[in-house]
Length: 461
Image 1 (cartoon, one colour):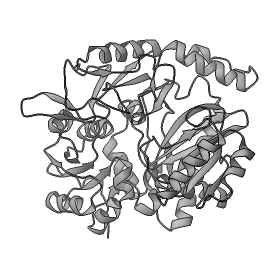
Image 2 (cartoon, rainbow, N blue to C red):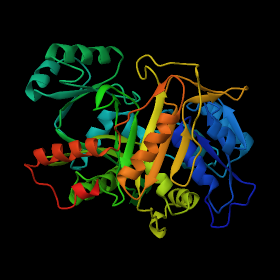
Image 3 (tube, helix red, strand yellow):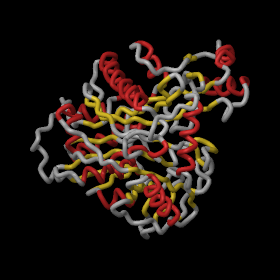
């Protein structure tokens, strides 16, 4: 039985359990501590980051996706509720384990989180419930018919069914250069006892729409554009995300208003379909990765949690008490809460190890990390703070630097200056949030839409 929360149920001694290991969870911790509810936090993380050590009353270093370990910590701390950040613990059933103990969670149960950890489930859910947004696709559990479907599509995307950290998807013309190479990759996936999802390759511009969801009510956040490719100009291998930006009007300069409204309608339809399909209420963050095409908005994939880095664009803008939002998600009354955001431009740039993501530098110290200010947030990701006080790389993304401004150029300059200041064997993408890269997006979308650009789009840059 999951206990409910009353408006005055959180005395100063209560804590919130945060499960996660990165900058996204560092950002969530900051918002929880800023709440007028006066809660403390405890963290379960693989890394003892400076952010967690500074904010939490206790950091439990251990596996975030081990329900037994999580239950042990929860039994000791007895948190008011848990916030589950990454996808791995959701797919491992950590929420199920906690709710069996009577600890409510912001994060869906394993079956509901299947919307992320099974790409075939997501595609079939949209098809079954007649929700628009699917590209042309097929799901293969044997090699039969793969070659024929690849040739039928001509241009395609091959996806393993399951969690891949954003790095398992391969696209024709970028990662795969022939039908034979694509079929070989699909067969390789099948040998791992995973289905393969093959979809048409879509031409357009991608964007992320994250929504708070209490099982019935869905409240959208400002849209964000992430940059997955490792290097400037959208080149190199895919990563967990090198950075992202959002606009003060909560749109994107290459999107029409109807694109965002359509994405919102899809998120709402999916939330309702999940309840109908599973009998459970989806409580947490429902994050749709969409692409605007000539033929409208299409769904690329769903995530069952905040994006990393996209969360760090929207959460610092949040004007509503975050703990109050978490309570509303748990209680199922989001419709009674006014969720509002500041109208600012944001740019997030990730500092990552040299060689990331294929052969990243590890165990080296980094320094000169800037201090946060009114217009700059500094969130620690996959770094460890040693007893000496040095901050060491662990091989994944290291520091997220998030700037806010009244213009995009102001936010970009602040983020760029901060990223350049970090010393050590690190790098970052200098082009994220720049006018040149955003103009490229605008021109690409204008070409797709036969040169039609809505008034004011370029001015928004």
